[in-house]
Image (cartoon, rainbow, N blue to C red; front, side, top):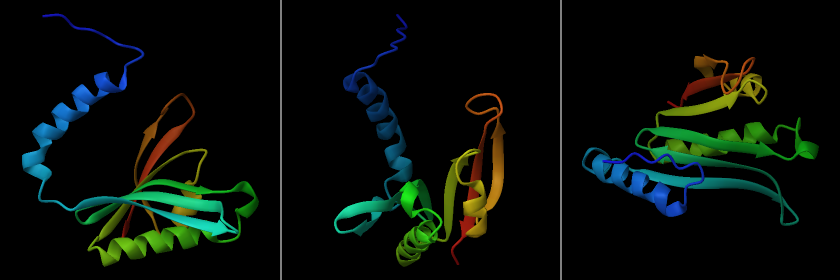
Length: 138
């Protein structure tokens, strides 16, 4: 038996692990609905803001929220969250989950009704934190 540590893995190296894990998980998770979607806000076909979320059973996991610097402070982020939460409700989601680093958007999510559940201190380095927040959609 030989253990290799690969610091610059190929897509095939990564696929060997992810395919194996997905195969193991399948009997436990295959009946749970799951899909990814994107909301984009455009002006004259230029994307000013967007979000990526994953519906997973009764949860919606917000993966990414981005608003162009020039468009910040205009309520666009709140509108994006509202829209993705509405999509989640339509698909049967009862709760939403998001994580954010300390320099990102903790106050923004709290203003939108998200409640901090947990924080990891010194993540990914000293003096930063990773916060996990949830919101009830019902």
